Length: 157
Image (tube, rainbow, N blue to C red; front, side, top):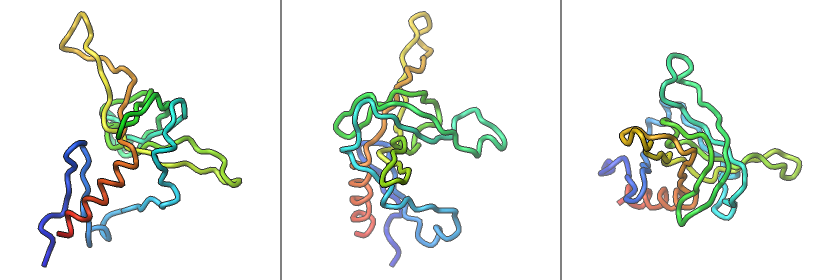
């Protein structure tokens, strides 16, 4: 009997977990090695991060190439990372990695979250327009893992 649903939507954040099944064989799916996945204890203000994204406005061949951006962890909340960096439309869903460290003589980086949104502020003279604050909000890897685990239980009911 096929599953009742092939996707799960988180109630709190813009996170969707999709069951690919046999479709994964037709797509160019890459599995992130467990050794690359970090944990919430690595999220410390001042640490450098980088993130990948497909900015809006890029066209043609350039639209298919992710841009690598950098920033800093500015703070953290319960399930969120506050980031100082150049965020833009198209950043949402971008993986957030700690800048690589030398670990056992091997350069390693850790996935610590996913970009959820950029913060903007209204321009005083033109309140209908907004200006990018250079602040991004990411969802911590711990919450993402909890969401994936919860989705597996829900999708297998």
